[in-house]
Amino acid sequence: MQQVKDRVFSGTQPTGVPTLGNYVGAYRNWLKMQDDYDCLFCVVDMHSLTVRNDAAELRKNAKSLLALYLAVGFDPEKCILYFQSHVPEHAQLSWILNCYTYMGELSRMTQFKDKSAKHSENINAGLFTYPVLMAADILLFNVQYVPVGEDQKQHVEITRDIAERFNNIYGDVFTIPKPLISNVGARIMSLSVPENKMSKSDDASGYISMLDTTDVIISKFKKAVTDSEKEVRYDPKAKPGVSNLLTIYSVMTDKSVKDAEKDFEGVGYGGFKLAVGEAVADKLKPIQDEYNRIMDDKVYLESVSKDGAQKARKIAMKTYGKVARKVGLAQI
Image 1: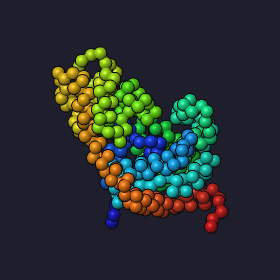
Image 2: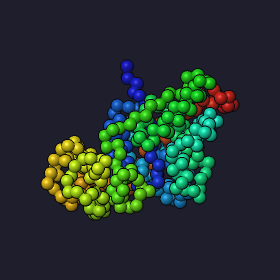
Image 3: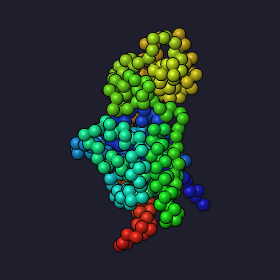
C-alpha cells in the first residue's frame, strides 16, 4: 500500500527575477521537500495585481519564474508546478473566505501596513484582502505544511484562524496548516544595508538577482558593506555585514559558518568579499544556463504549466465543491 505523504504548498510572485535571498531562504529548502512531501509550487500571479503592472511584462515574468523553478531543480514528475490564475478555484474560494474573515484581522496584518506606506497612491481592496487569497491558496489543497520565512508566519496564522472558524461552523472541512520555517540560511540580508532582509525593492547594489552575470555579482560583493574592523568573524549584532557574507558563503559552499570563518583567518575584507562573490557566481551559473535552455523551449514550458494546472485543479475542484455545498451555493 502506497504511503500517503503530507502536502506542502508555497509560491512566489512574478514581480521580477527572484533574489539570492529567495534561492537560499526558499527554493533550496523546497527542493529538499519534493521527495518527502506531496508538493505544489505555484507562480502566484494573481497576488501581483495589488500593484499596477504592465500586462506584457507580468506575463513574461510569470513564464520566467516557472522556467527558474525548473532550472533550480523542481521536477514536474515529483511536484505540481502551475500558474495560480490557471486554477480559478483560488479566486472562488477566496471570495467565500472573505465572508468568514473580519476587518479587524486584516487591518492588523503587517504586510498591509508596510505596502500601504510604500504604495500610498494605490491602497486598494486587493491589498487589504491579500491574506484571504493566500489563505485560499493554502486551504484549497488540504495542506499540512507551508514553508515560509519568519516574516510570512503571520499569513499562516490568519489562515489557521479562518480555517478553524469555518470548521467550527460547518464541521471538518479544512486541514489546519502549520508553518514550516527553516533556520538554516533562512534570512539573507541586504548587501548595502545588512540590517535589512535582501529584497528586490532595495537599491540595485543591495541584492543579487538569480540572473545577474558573474561580473555583476562580483562587482556587487566588492561593494558590500562590512565594518571598520579587519577580522572576518560571525557576530550578527556587532558585525552584521560580515556575518551576512559568512552566511552566504557557508550556504554556497555547504560549509559550516565555523569552517567558513577558518577559511578567512588572516584574510582581508577585499579577498573575503571576492571569495564570497565567486562562490555565489559558481553556484548560480549552472542554474542560469539551464534557465536559458528552458526559456528557449516554449513547447516544454507550456506543457509543464498546462499539466500542472490540470493536476492542481483536480485537487482544488474537490475542495471547492465541498465548501460550496457547505455554504449553500447552488450545484450544477
